Amino acid sequence: MATCRDVITQALQQSRIAALGDAPEDSEITFGLTVLQSLFDNWVSSGMFGRMKDVYKTIDYTAQEQDRVITSGSPTITIPDAFGDDDKVGTTRPPYDLSLIEVVGATRKVWLYDTNGWVDINALALGDTCPLARRGNLAAVLALEIHGPFKDAPHIQKAAGNFLSVISLKHGTTSRPRTAEYY
Image (tube, rainbow, N blue to C red; front, top):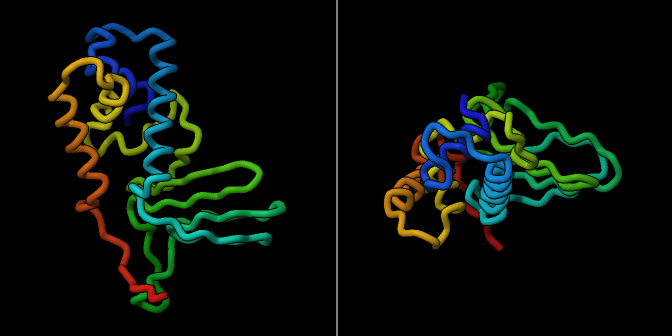
């Protein structure tokens, strides 16, 4: 599995900041990690992984997919590995792929369900397995962010657009059932 450092290195090479085969400088890697974290933060706040439902809790609670649990005091918030299947009584299912759970209290934690389990995307580290890295060219999206408007880079723009389409359209996964809400 690709680490955050691997994805950042690839992005720096795609954007031609680092030469192929050369290790990027520590300052470039640190900058890349900051940009990678901001990508995930922006995707969460913009609704890339779906709309969040605010839930206020002062007691222990088991979070549901797409919950933003706002806590007061010190309740224990459980992030479950299985949910009850609404269509079949007595059965469970794993979380829907690309589901999100956010817990906001004294600190903030954000978990993304990335194919095989929940991944904390709130405080990425260089040695962490990079969320979403195996789904396509995440490095291209990062390279585009790093590269910015300074040079013409249609190859990076195309690769980044393809990756973002795959993630936002979620064609490779079962979608959450849609229910109408009337106000």
